[in-house]
Amino acid sequence: MAGNEDIRRISIKLKPLSINQAFQGRRFKSKGHRQYEKDIHALVKPCLNPLTGMIVATYSFFIKNDKMTDGDNLVKVLQDILVKLGYIKDDRYIKRYIIEKYHSENEHIEVEFREIK
Image (tube, rainbow, N blue to C red; front, side, top):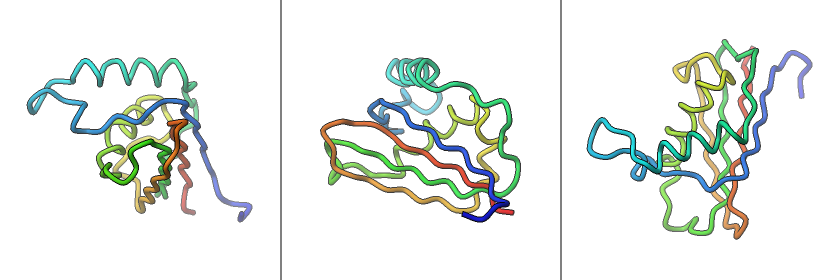
């Protein structure tokens, strides 16, 4: 790792929520979305020093149904919550996404935001 990189790593012991499960119709958060947000807020401490430069975001999803799950559907809801928690200033600063899915009976999420200098 280069000495000038700024990295935030987040480990969330929770099953990811798909964007398809997150909204009722076009505008309203589903009950599942509201619960997922509460659960993440309970498991992840807020970050007081958000990354503000260009970012590489790596999302690793450890899920039971990895072959039938569309990885990019798992990112948006989680990413918006992590922005609210202060890990990055705004998701528009993400220059590169890496989305990984792994089969696991122990469902959880690993996230890394790395600022590009």
